[in-house]
Length: 555
Image 1 (cartoon, one colour):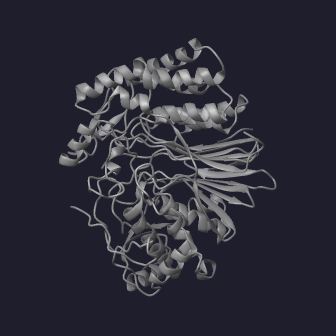
Image 2 (image 1 turned 90 degrees about the vertical axis):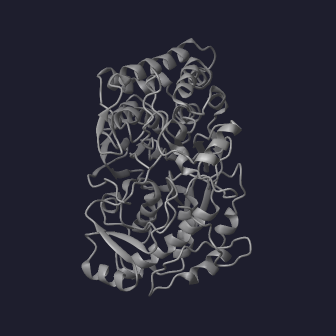
Image 3 (image 1 turned 120 degrees about the vertical axis):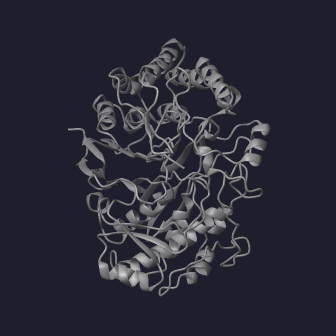
């Protein structure tokens, strides 16, 4: 992978009814030999083990993701999604691996969705499972280890019988689901190892055999049987057609830094739009967590989110005016919409086609789960940031495979003509959104946030924490944050809560009073806003430091 590769990976993330996610417990670690921060100690240990055995960040990332898929079931699963941002220092090149599954190819299925809507969490809300192919692709393109080596720590966890997976039902009950799913999934993983052993040819051929058995072999047959039995629309043809796309990222500058995001099939580019607006304000002079600072960042995010909801969708299906949205001219005409004395109570997308500051937005016609996180670095300087999730499907385990699916199709809609309207084989416009920040062609930050619609709201603040206020991960991750739901919800298209602003109760009371005077509909939270992982890489010393829920380093 070259002397220095930074991978910023984002799998899947979910918002809940409130923009507050459990992110209070944070641990820090630093070192030059390798670092893993993830949502579970066992998953962190899996990644550390891979680094200790001579693997690089991609190998450790694959091992950590596999372990997270069984240690935080309900937050992430092997049937979920894994978008990835990759920086290769030897090539000075940033690429995207789009580990995002699509809607069924069958037009009759799409007709059903258009007539009946997209269910919130049954088998019909599942996109094609993408995590397994992404992990295999990560190993093929950037790793050095075999699938067997990457999955061994996960098999040990499954063979020990844990953890138990519970579903919280809509009527308040908590039920244990498929108590033997661990043994079933262990059998499935061993089938994949068997495919790797039996395949002839190169390491890449053997890894491809792993993906082929899952998506085009007997495991795909078992999944199709379950889809049919459960009344779902996915079929083996959908699985067989799935490949992890390699794409160009979207990027833009901020104060001499270059910020990279996945394309508009995620919400990521609106972070760049927001930073373009904020570059016209003296953020540092306003002061950290001052009323002016919170106000201007919130108002800029509202404008970026409005464009997200208006224009973003799978660029394989719709034309997204990304160049215009990130242009200097568009930022100049949109920036005056921010009134420093008054909070906006309107949804205000712009008109990039005609370079006008405002257009009438799409009307908004009148979802459960969880998220985890991951960041990894190795002694070569390779870094991965990941935000895995399975979007809390209640569909159960797929037959005797042990495979659990997500419910990502809820991030599509059924509004004819909208960029994110469901179509055969279309990727949903997802919230999962890794961030990679470079300075002088060298990576300095990798950021991953759990929390659906607030992921990039927290990521924006982490970037500002570092660029404007010089805060490293150990200070930025636990710092108070704020968020708005002044946008269309990404999980069922809930209407915007106009003027909403939620702030940590640690924000000074006088600041909160001033924000209320400016018209913000203010609420406070005791918990953390966004489940955050952040890695900083010192380009001079090559030391990495990170903060997140479960941190560990290679000694």
